[in-house]
Length: 483
Image 1 (cartoon, rainbow, N blue to C red):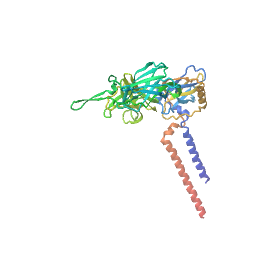
Image 2: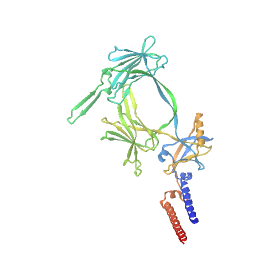
Image 3: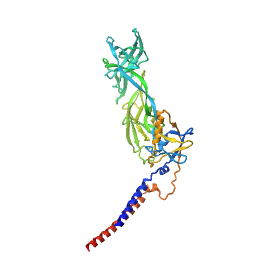
């Protein structure tokens, strides 16, 4: 029985050793041998100990894993250097609007086809930057004049021909704000009138020519419905710029290739975009087309890994990541534009933008601009040391560095409003990876079914011998007892 216990202890020891052996397969030294590219880190005036921030560039993004686990910084002695990986941030000013309701209103009902309204600011009201007409109506177009009235009752024209409108019947656009020039006036008068025939907007004079099989031309003319204009209230607004908290910084990234095609069956314009796998967050459509409002969607195309070409177009599975509206209104004083499509940060290489044209003519497209986040590596650089970034491996796992001291140092710099020393990456170089001969090739053992199967066969055979010996011992004990 003692022999059996010894054998079982041997098996247990082999299992523990095998587990420990496999747990070290991805040690840091082994990780460095798997990284296929390197770039020098260019630091100016490296004469003293500094905390360095170096942004990741497009070449690095194109060769690295989604989570950037395969990044390592090494010094001129070949030693790895702990680093923080974070998003680059910046402080931005944002416009904050304060609104309040206009009071002390008096209405002159004698104006034909319009409204004449006078009101004044309260004593504690700030000077307004504009006013907003709050109305429940849709499908309207009204002309607005705004006057400043001084203490003597004299009027000064502030806005001669303002326009408020809602074109919901024709296009998804509405405007009820009127910007005001700087004035010290505390009393105002506005005149809201229905547009004259000469002022009719071309947006509301839509003519389409439809030819049927008999070549008969049919003209459709749409005009706005005339009805009393109802106002729920008037609001003043003022704007000021405030400094926001740290926000993630973005930059423009170069697009590798884009192409435009038309899906006439589904009435779509399709833009295919190929990138270098940067963390993109938006596309901006550059088009000379005017006066349109189109629904738009952004898809990620998951190309199959077995496709032989760099940018495969077959056997793809689209994934919708954003929906928005593309709008450009350019007519007289009416100027409105929204050509940016935002989406969550994404590092895929193939995107597709689909514009829904319905029965409208396709837009013209000149180019597409891509913007995205910036990842940066922050580390402590010693004087007169040189550093380089190693990257590019599908099998490397994230490094587990002790960066507590580095985090405290970075936080201290931010508290003192000091800046990190910015560095840049040099040209990329392909590494000549040579793994030295070792008694045991760790990577080979990890991936070789023959080695793992051999170990299993030895353990199985040893277990069979033990069971055979145990059965003989049991038989002896049984025969001894019977006698």
